[in-house]
Image (cartoon, rainbow, N blue to C red; front, top):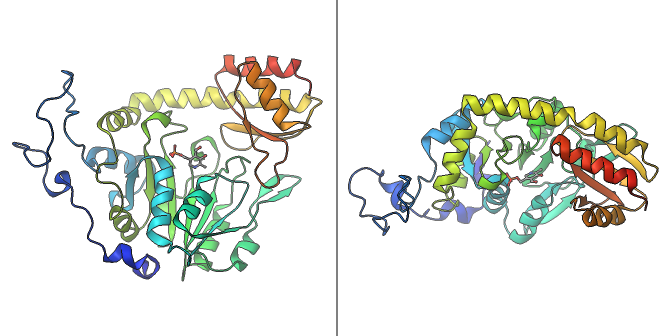
Length: 353
Ligand SMILES: Cc1ncc(COP(=O)(O)O)c(C=O)c1O
């Protein structure tokens, strides 16, 4: 597969910015980056210095975590940046198309529209068993540069079958990349496709430390793809995307002791779901409950906005999903700590629309 033929020609033609930290390592006298020689604190972290654009130790740790080689991984400011880089690298304004499967995470369409790409929507199908991807319609759609799939999907929580995703990658191999957003994969049962990205040349996987790893505040995500795609994205990523404290926190979160703690936390978190689902299922004003495979539950109520407003008055923030296609009166509820979930259930017992 010829990635250069898919990329925007102007991205291939440009001379990427060569930052001081990229041109030379940070050994010896550092008089090459117009930094201040003194740090504002005495904590020993060299915050006066620009960070490594892609710190090797973090890259190796993330690659190890996801079971991929470092050449297939780019560390980004969350998956949000990965999505944006892909759209900017591949979509010519006014010419190229991006496919999304709503209801889904809003950043795919937003990044595409900011770039001037056309958004083709192939909605998920709602069945008795929950939501599912409409792969036949996706395959018959006008050719797109990027096909954004999300599994488990936000906000419906459904997983997509690996076979369907890989078949689509084969079907669109001549003209597009299949981008699988696995932001919630650690909560589900299905294995990640990360180790297939880079092997299947037009498969891209997005992973993040924002959800299961508890580091949303650090903004650390990974794009996993063939080395050619990673090299292309590196041409346009900001010179120093990864702040030093965020990198340090990510390294800690990937340590064996943090992994042990995380395992226990995830077990506790997911053990909360059946109780919440049962409470929601019993409520007279809740029509549908989609437990999903992630750290949230989606419900359809008789009054979605009313539920969100009443919860806010009780000091509980929920997310109204009514603006999403097919989700009128739907509300997404994120799992919290056992105490927080108990507070939510107590609120629901009192709530009447
Ligand atoms: C499906 C999905 N992808 C990506 C993101 C953004 O992740 P990050 O924090 O890594 O930018 C979110 C955040 O809610 C999400 O739900």
